[in-house]
Length: 353
Ligand code: HEM
Image 1 (tube, rainbow, N blue to C red):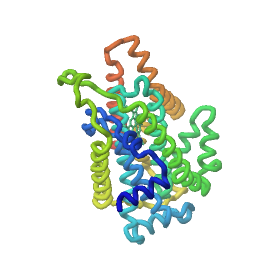
Image 2 (cartoon, rainbow, N blue to C red):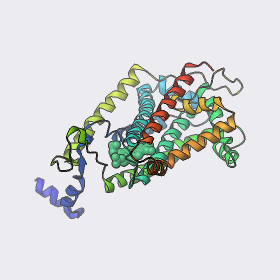
Image 3 (cartoon, rainbow, N blue to C red):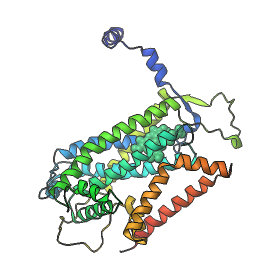
Image 4 (tube, protein in one colour):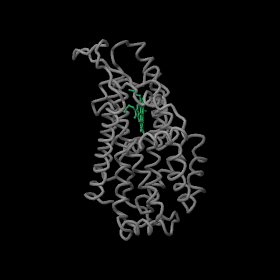
């Protein structure tokens, strides 16, 4: 029976199954047994959870300023399990940001962006920006007081970018001020443009990982060497089973978070009343606090400068390495950057203004 089904499938999909077996059994370096090294799979899972929960939310959400808040309230209070699906969407988004940052730190501190993986670093940076833009556009859809004013601040920040700022802000707002056009644009960005961009970037990211293989680390201080026979293990089934276990755990985790910390709806947006404290999502705190330390324009220009250095990091690192060979200056720069980010998040989070 099984043979007949297999023959039926093989005739209709004439594919070399042995080749597929070979293709899926790519050798994985043994350090990928450690969770810290295979963190890249986590945002991938969370992205899938977000897609499924996001599609469910679009059945009820109405992208119109007079109805958006009410539709979010309806999802949260009246749709069966609406609060849970909304919670899963929100929590998987938060965890996606955390896991992307942790994955990026692992890539940075193991210098896995070095030749020949520079292009994958660039794609990763584009993914990072996509993930943050997902957060910003999603937050603006709720149309409560905090999210409305965070959108005002966010689009004002875009307007302060030299040369192209006014165009960018006008394009995002759909006019000189926040209006119904802004909500439509944020919605299209959130459910159309960004998922398409994320799919494309992820396909490229994984394609490059597949053709380069994951970078290998030989820890000679623990007696490892290039001659060890168990340097690699197969993707299928070993690594796939680990990833499936991580996936099941993540679904359980976001579901529990959605139940224990249900997402709130806040006060409806009131464009006439500016709240005393406007706070974006926590992952925008470093930029938000940075802007408060300088004049708005200086803050924006320096933020763009920092992001450009981050994009160019593989080449910046190569030139540092040429000047100070073997001194791991990049590691110290990385530690300083992480400390600075944590300090900025804490200052912004704890301060009342
Ligand atoms: C949605 C976001 C992302 C997803 C789903 C993702 C996924 C992955 C996966 C599955 C791997 C294989 C190794 C591992 O699991 O660590 C990987 C490797 C890699 N990622 Fe990402 N990634 C994302 C974002 C980023 C970011 C933000 C960067 C850096 C700016 C980055 C740079 C890299 C590089 C350079 C590698 C190769 C590492 C090596 O060969 O050791 N990725 N990514």
